[in-house]
Length: 518
Image (tube, rainbow, N blue to C red):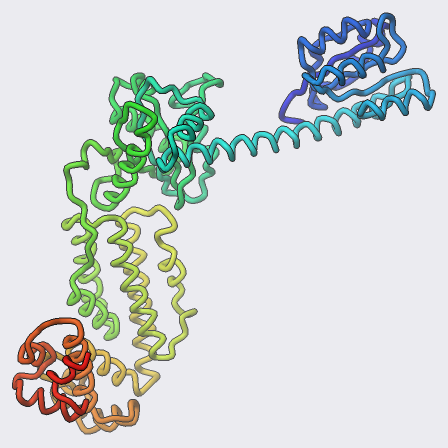
């Protein structure tokens, strides 16, 4: 069945023919409803202008104004352009020719065959439905573009008011931009819109709400102050009601982020930006209630990273498959996200840094990434709305899986420990490192470790330590104004003179000469 009922107008000087058509045809099943009927062309022309039907079914031979003249006059009006179907007892080819000239859709001979005319009606309705959908798609696209331009705020004054007019926004009322986040990617955004519209407008089918699609299963909407007034004049109560209705009907968790209330369309951009800032509190504020700009505007949110030592510690535990320590580190990490008020983007950066480091370590050991069954979930974890607890569980499961795989690779590959030792030196070069202390730390025989290191990397262990320290010293000489003794201390030399000697031996110049050469 066609979803939209189009209007059809019947014109025939024979009353029984008209009534017969009305009773014979399954109009509703074909997507039409009869809006009016007339027994002559002159009256029909008047009714066509009044009712603006989508389709006119007319006879040819009629008093006052025949069918073809009716079609011609209607075409000449240019204000309305319905489709025409001619039903006639005359099979004269000249009539058909003239009918084609005026754009008539079909020419059906009497007596009317029910199946034939219903098939024709369905084709016309299908044509109209496609045209209507194209028009709606175009209008929706233009409205979405105008709304997007409005909230970005990058419009000249004349274009701004053009958008306001196009979107039918009342300039005398206040507004607030709200972001809805549904914790279930299977939920259709159309359903979300329907629930929101019904909550705000009830059964008022003429009322409209401006929506904007966000990424990651989020949808934004512009709420009018007069709509908020219905809910105790309080935007918090309004948001709580909206959240409750969405949760009930969608049967999943919903988080709402509320921008600040503004008093003019020109400030809608400010409300949108406020809502986006509130979104950064996603992992700090409790999501069981709407997160409102008014309650977060005086709170600080931090765009920081975890301490470098915390990253190093976690990676060491992963590489050594220390399950209990991994659990403790992850728990501490996520606790800091909340205690130190990490912004949503900062949480993403911190988690992704560990994930990428795990992948990098696996690649350095010639491991197969496809064996990490949770890798794709972790690479795309932020593309789906999740609670902090859900993210923590996914992250921990991924790290435990990675630790087990790395442990297996270490057992299979004799050089596994050597790679870990090299990586340890890369991050602990400031400390007092010797072949013996490192061998003890990694439960290896010092002689065997030295031989294996030389075999794997083509240089002696002590030479590699020196290389790392000198390279880091060169970086500090280039990028800082630290004194030579300070540089020496920073890269693991307790004796500045010995540092200068080793630096000159390695580079062919003293640290001072190296810095001056830059």
